[in-house]
Image (cartoon, rainbow, N blue to C red; front, side, top):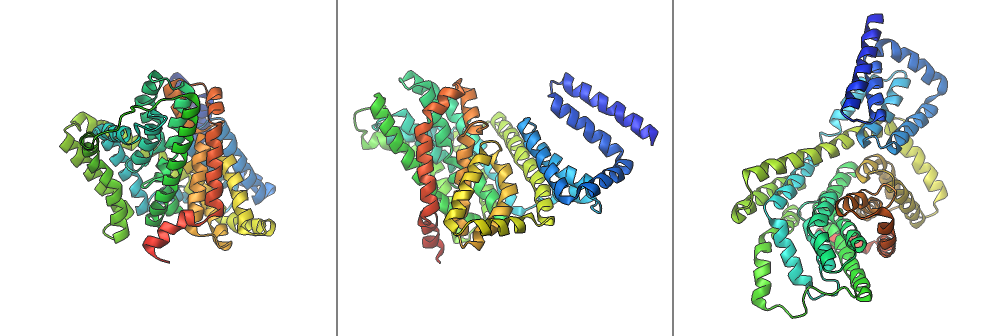
Length: 487
């Protein structure tokens, strides 16, 4: 035992030194060292920790687990490590629970066939970017919105909407448009702050337009039809696109931001812009139509999207071997990050389920919320606050198993609640202090966060108005689903 302890202490010190040499933060280095210490000496550490847990009680241990997770998140430790850390506290201090379950749930949580749609659609999106599709879509957007007040800002919003149907990743969309459009917008007289805000805010549309990754995750977690969520996303994402284009028009007219051109395009000029973008624009139609007609599932649609993207790359002659390798690297990194969060949150969800937290929370909320609208308002406020601090996919996997059953108890349509939840998450990604969309866009454009937040106020007001519309007017989210699926 003493040999194991000596070796583990030596190994822990070595890990701290190595990670610090690699410029990894002290917090992460210490966590890694402690994990090694506990893991190697688990045979005699476990009984000691279990005795402490027994004296504290299960509820106290659960509280400590949640606090550890939140503290790690605020210290900017990676999300999956923070969630794993909180769950590990519960397993170590709770007697009668085998640690093998921790590993089993971490693995089985990522084994859902529906989750395969995520790497497929991410891969299709990266292939599209490397195949020159983005430039062709942007030229088409310029043709459509060129005479509108706001010019390139209108192009920005429409491009996010159309690219959302191809990539499904809001961060990738924001980074891409920040590089491609913001410099040109500044050259045409738009302020850096306004250009950055439009880019970040319009990227919110991406998770709401099929095949948004957020919809795939929600469908897997809450056992809701991904095809129906995709169909609802057309209305919700389209409404946000129209709302933002109207707001951009109002702001641009007030500030004197000019359109790209004044003269009307001829039919031949418009066709010249539409023709290269026609094939990429068919992809969302193929995905939605195929799923609705039962030709393929959402997961199979992702695989078809990859093949379609490769064919486009070959047709355009821009998808090189180097581009394919780079696209695959980006896919692995993006998918790996999402799946690690899914794995960690699956363990935490098992802990919550075992302790009957969803049932207790349901009873508590039902006792204080007299009707479904009071519940929806409370959920909106709660998710907006949580989304300001924690990444959306992580909160979804932890909170949806808690909140979705309560929504059903109130008689709220599954599709409506899903879109309300995803819309809240999207707003959180734009909101300080930890809004991922805000920081990704500002890091690329060089915009300061304080002027960004000031410029974003009208967009926040628009988002709140649309959120209220989704909350109190169910047909906005469900009408097109009932029209196509019946019921």
